[in-house]
Length: 115
Image (cartoon, rainbow, N blue to C red; front, side, top):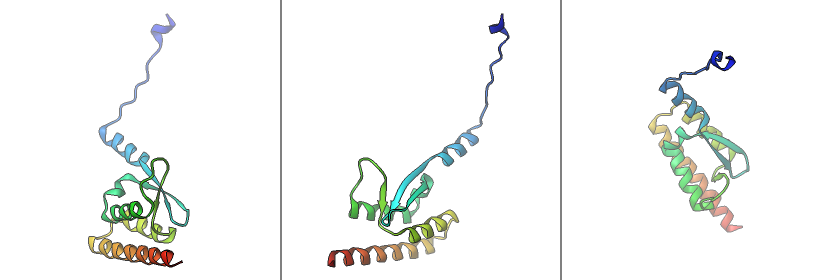
């Protein structure tokens, strides 16, 4: 008799709510070359600046089988990149930022090979 009187609680979520939850919960763990950890929303990875950072990371550090990706920039530069992407930076600014990141990466690579 008690079992018959139990009510089932059901939650209804619209597709919009589920998509919002997935966006909030879907993060990529990355590290900068100075060891600082960042959690980056996966939606940011479609931006050219992140695609190029991942390419540079692969060239410099290889593809990790287990663990986080190390990006070839320091935490200060990466914080700047993340803040601009979060504010939906214009394409022209993204191109300038890519040039800056690539230049910093080349300088760091050449100075480490000289040492």
